[in-house]
Length: 281
Length: 162
Ligand SMILES: Nc1nc2c(ncn2[C@@H]2O[C@H](COP(=O)(O)OP(=O)(O)OP(=O)(O)O)[C@@H](O)[C@H]2O)c(=O)[nH]1
Ligand SMILES: [Mg+2]
Image 1: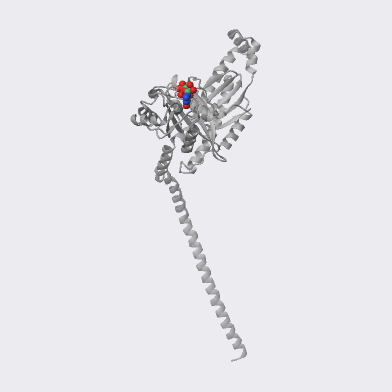
Image 2: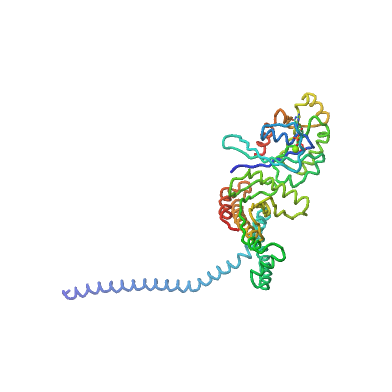
């Protein structure tokens, strides 16, 4: 073999291997490409199926799990009827009150319109009531203020929480006495489901707002006008709504009614202080 | 939080309900009889141990010879009952068992103590035969006048309802 042939041969070998190698690689690449391609093709097909199934699943939940959830809820509500009703009470109360307030406002707006000016309305009131006009104006301006708020367990009359502007005589005893008076009046004069709402006591008015498990007593000094009453009721409803919300939270956080943690007195009193402490009525 | 419990004290007229409470709360006694009207409420904080206290809210109900007429409103949410009779007046305990049935029907599952008061006026051994003959069982025999077993009775009840 001549030198040239040797080189040729070598090149041939090398090239062949090169080529084959390149071929093999190309094949590999083709396979990979195909796989990828197929996957894409596959996912194109599969993805809508999955998302359709997901949609179906979401749609199906109420149908499939609905009865179970409802049954659980029903059971929960049945077990804790009082707490649930108690939680709804302030919400309903607020709604009814808003409705009535709206009606009354419309009525008084109409009257005001007819009387054209506030001045005239005062004159008018003065003529009719025989009270001096200045006094009518004064009474419109006169302030009332919240002296004390008691959250009291219905029935037992046990004090759950209180807010007081100044030191007073024993609040546990006041709560008991108020409950006894309330119980007596409701027993003696009212049919069931009628609640004593106001006790007038010398310079004070005690507003009583009854709910299911508790009632709230607010002691007010000064002129307790309808407007003041309106504001006091709003404060009470807000407070009670909040309180019952927390109560329900704790209700659903534990199955065991006995072990359930009650809303603490400290947090209740903080809330009372916040809501009633700086309130202007 | 301070634990509060409601205790009602009831029984016939003049058996010493108010006197028992006054003895327990103020440690005093008066021979003057002032008929109670309606309800009177007092409070006494009892201490079982240091930092372990309970507020007893004591409802002193007006006396009545007909236990049925007691207002249900006064009994709501009661944690403990003290039924008092006067050991010197048979009319206050002759119908004791049926009186107690009425109380138990109004307050089912509520701890109840039966207390014979004014023991300072009688000889206790004679009482025992009297009670046996009338099929009467008491939890305590007390005297609001001398203070005998008064505090003990209320403390026992407090422990029971804790
Ligand atoms: N000797 C004696 N007298 C007593 C005792 N307890 C009460 N009394 C007297 O019995 C009378 C009636 O006592 P109260 O405590 O007012 O009786 P009550 O059950 O509250 O009476 P009402 O509320 O009217 O039903 C008073 O004159 C008391 O001084 C006692 O333990 N011993
Ligand atoms: Mg009395």
